[in-house]
Amino acid sequence: MVVPFGVSVGDFIAGIKLVQDLVDGLKESCSSSSDFRDLVRELHSLERALISVKNVIDPKNPESLPYDIAHVDALKHIVLQAKQTVDEFLDKNRKFLLSLGVVGGNGSGVRDWVRRVEWRRYKREDVQALRWKINGHSTAVNIILLSMQL
Image (cartoon, one colour):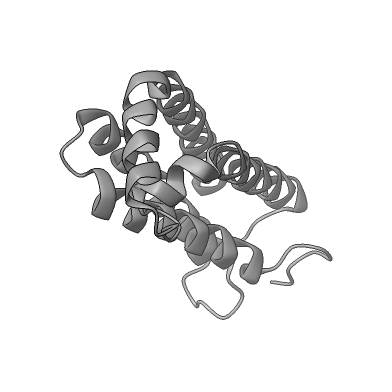
């Protein structure tokens, strides 16, 4: 099996790494919040889907499935959308995520405290929207993987 031009296992590994980093940061900073526990579950689901994609189309894996370019292109498109979804969330909420300790810390105790309060009060919808988008990406990947196995 030859991987089509422009698609590589590295693309999927990069997506998996991005999801893992976000999950780890959210776990460390907000483990008591049910919203974040739900988000972490959705991100784990996406991570498992991306790992499945990598395993299915990896030419070095003897158990990889025969596939056609249409399936791989669809998977690549979904992976890129998922990465874009996570990147947009991180960019839009970077100032909060710094204060929450998800992507480092800014070192200002008062500023961090104010941002944490603001996050809890105003960003619940952002977390819910991210959960729905991540769920959609995971579902789409799993549907395509199932169709490849049929």
